[in-house]
Length: 464
Image (tube, rainbow, N blue to C red):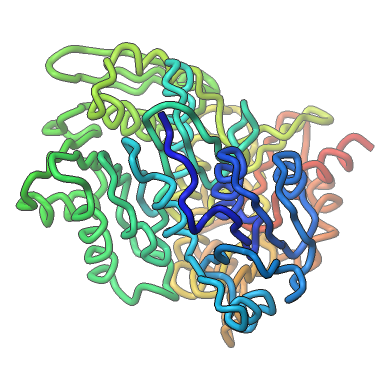
């Protein structure tokens, strides 16, 4: 059922092939039979997984890594113009394709669901991928994180459906023409690319306008930015709008969310009927993601009761409240949260799931621009923890901004009454946390950078 390989993608070369978005596209192409090659800055499990699929993966960037017969070079917005492989592509006149265009080409001819929003995209996309697979529909999917079950972020399926995480950060989600689009929330983020909420709304409006005729926009009825987007797109012709959430006027209305330890039981009202199902991750935030996934599947014509049951098979995504282990009576959980709304949601979820636990957070801010704009709100979110340590900013693709440091977050956290301290040497964190933690505590490593590496090290120190 699934289409073959676009001609331009027969021998693609990916610069930064190990990235979450890039590796997913590369995996699907390799599974479809393309001769995939690429490079990444360091060795990783992802590089190994790509090699297992037949891809050639070079470590480091050099002009000689690019084969003369490559049909295209795939890049993300993070790749700089002076990258030697990109420069070599220009010399050889090899077409350069943005990651989003490559993904769009893979979705052609399929019934696609694109999942967008400032946060929650990876979880919701993953829920759909798991549920559709459980129902035997064999979807293709491309996700920004590895599923806890299959342990991969992408797959080529023989079915008619393609589920994709749609990235708004660089406006690349405007390249897709989905049959169903989900918008979970609309908030100001990605400050290097958006100067105001008006620019954010314009971008999401463009995304909604790309939904195919008679397609469906599934959008939150609760989150203020999503509600405003709904108001702006109501007049788009041939677009069905389905709202979901706890608001009384939601089309798919959440009647009740009942916490049950590390899971939740969700009851919704759909077409006048009550439907109850289990979400195997804690917290209201994730329960609402599951309701969005349910509404999107129903928009594709999948029976609601079948989909609800299948959603219960979702067991999480790596780095999304992922339990890393327990030692000396202390549990260590990893969180990808890096935006204040995500941080608050994950801390509230942990507080609800472990009511008697003391919550200790190791937070690593992600991006100088995000810290500059949202550092105060990040600090306020950390006040929900019992104690926190804050690392230096993880720069990712950005250069430093003078005067912007983790101190912004620490000062805001202290002003909100938080017990917080700075740790500049990341290597000392396991020892620091082992000295703070007591049996019954829960440690949350939080952030989108390499703070995730600290979980196992903290467990080792607790065990010693």
